[in-house]
Length: 312
Ligand code: ADP
Image (cartoon, rainbow, N blue to C red; front, side):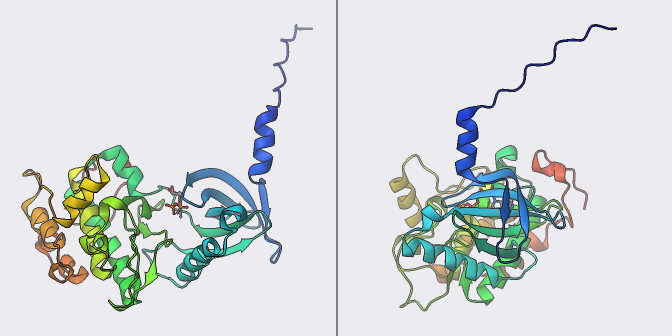
């Protein structure tokens, strides 16, 4: 009889960890109204209010990205209103380049928002790995962002927080605009709330000057996104936020001479101080940067981490 190796020591439960997990979120979440159960998967990321998890519908194995917002974070009425606004607004959107809103429910512990899973995360993750993208890639992503943005603006909705982290990418490398936490219905110039919200580096001069946010302010942010993807850093980044705001108000930024000349022209036609001098979304699409340059139909997934070989 061969001698048996000693069995491996039984894994000791890590008491502090298991206690921690219990208070966090159950492995299975049940929607009491429909009776459907969902199994919690990996953590996709953390946001201001929410943690976002992969979750699987146990009835059909369909996977979702689920924003889990603890009730404790929305105990105040104005906090709850913000989330309800985000849900109601996102629910009303149906477009191929907008993250699909599936459904939502809540239990004693959390609010759960079920979204289309974008398995390749966002342009922020791609940008971190790549630092700069090529012109064909930038055209590919920008066209999809503009398509989503035209849809929103036509519905009278402003996104107000356009940034790399809100451009999600699915398994198929299709772009989806998401995170409607700061989105709002377009109001007249007089009605506009003059609060400053959004991503500091990408805020438009008129927003900083408290003149309110219009469709042109989303276009400004789009210009900042284009600059960042091509140049590797935001146009108005400094070590000090006050200094950054000063640069934005004066539209003080530099274009690297190595940049494609038509990209330089397009960026400077977007980053105009006066909102009415800025290109519109249709004018951007009609710009020579798009009409005279190649846009791939698809991008290979490898382009998330390395420069792709793209042939016109
Ligand atoms: P924020 O505070 O920016 O609103 P979110 O709660 O929207 O953050 O999202 C937190 C993180 O969850 C994001 O950074 C992203 O990595 C991930 N995430 C959000 N939505 C999705 C999705 N539909 N698919 C995949 N990952 C997502």
